[in-house]
Image (cartoon, rainbow, N blue to C red; front, side, top):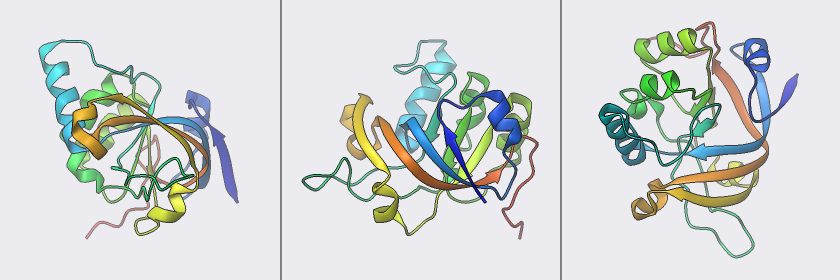
Length: 176
């Protein structure tokens, strides 16, 4: 059964999500990849304010392709999440509630997820055009100079994902 969830995520919804659950997400989420995460992390390290409030937010690791006429975005598939692992615990400590990407996460990220009551969703790699259909609106929030790696706010409807790691640290990701 697929669970329909609406953002922002509440602690009760997060606790109810279990590794392996299929979800359809509706609401607004942030985007960000390597370059944006590095800048956010540097501000955190300096004790300076972030250009976006991440408390209670979901961040999708994506660099959307330019939109064709009549579409909010072009193909918008997930980026490999391990590239944000250095930065994720600091953002989770600041109130980030969920991350969306693809692939495994480090032990440090999973430990921080458990500590902060967060969840990691996997979006389907290779389905960028399909995923983009669920993105109804895109607005630039910060770091416009980074192009596709800027921080955007997506408004999504029935965004497909799977709970890859739940708030208890249970995972569907296979260790090799």
